[in-house]
Image 1 (cartoon, rainbow over the protein chains, first blue to last red):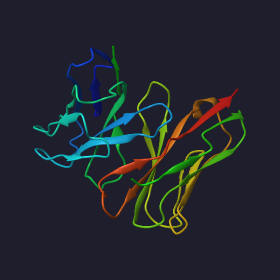
Image 2 (tube, each protein chain N blue to C red):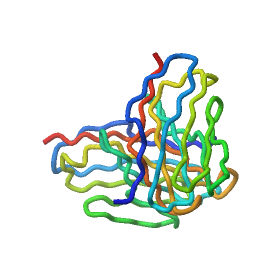
Image 3 (cartoon, rainbow over the protein chains, first blue to last red):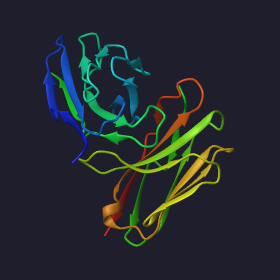
Image 4 (cartoon, rainbow over the protein chains, first blue to last red):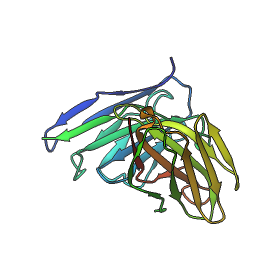
Amino acid sequence: DGGITQSPKYLFRKEGQNVTLSCEQNLNHDAMYWYRQDPGQGLRLIYYSQIVNDFQKGDIAEGYSVSREKKESFPLTVTSAQKNPTAFYLCASSIGARSQGYTFGSGTRLTVV
Amino acid sequence: ILNVEQSPQSLHVQEGDSTNFTCSFPSSNFYALHWYRWETAKSPEALFVMTLNGDEKKKGRISATLNTKEGYSYLYIKGSQPEDSATYLCAFKSSGAGSYQLTFGKGTKLSVIP
C-alpha cells in the first residue's frame, strides 16, 4: 500500500542535542511538507519541498533544517537552536505543490527531557 | 501569516443528530479550501478540496459548501455516528504570496455520544 511513513513514533531528546525525524513516501509525490502541532494551535508549516534538491522555509523554520536528496525522503532535523522543540510533528506529501489534497503520515511526538 | 478560523472549537452531539461547523478564511487571493478529518491516533485524512465559489461536495453523510466572496465554508454531518468523532480541520491555500502553503485552522473537535 502506498503511503507516508514517519519514524519514530515517539522520540526523547536531551536538551542541546540535534535529532532527525524521518519521513518516507512511496506515492511518487513531488511535494513534501513538515508541520508542527502544539496544544491549542493549528498545524504550522516548518519547511516544504516542491522537487528534489529544493526546499523553502515555512512560517516557523528557525531552529530546523531539512534535506531533499531523494524524491521519497524528506528528513527534518531539530537542532539545538530550536528553543521549544517539544511538539507533535507531521509530515505530508502531495502530487504537486499546488495540487489537490495532502497525504499525511502518522506523526512523531518529540519530547525534550 | 494568513488567518483561518474554525468554530466551534469543540462540540458534543447525540448519535443521530445532524451538525455543522464553520471555517472562515481570507476572501482575497483564494485558490483552494481543504477539509480534513483527523481521528485520534491516526493520520489526517482528506475529505474535500474545494476551488470554486458555490461549490458543494458530498461524501456519504458529510457535505461541504464554499463561499469564496465572503470567505467561509460549512461542513455538515447528517445523522452523526460515533465513528464520526474526530477533529475536523480546514485549510486555506492562497493564490498570492506563499501560494504553495496550506494554512490550517485550529480544528473543530466533534464527539458523538452513543
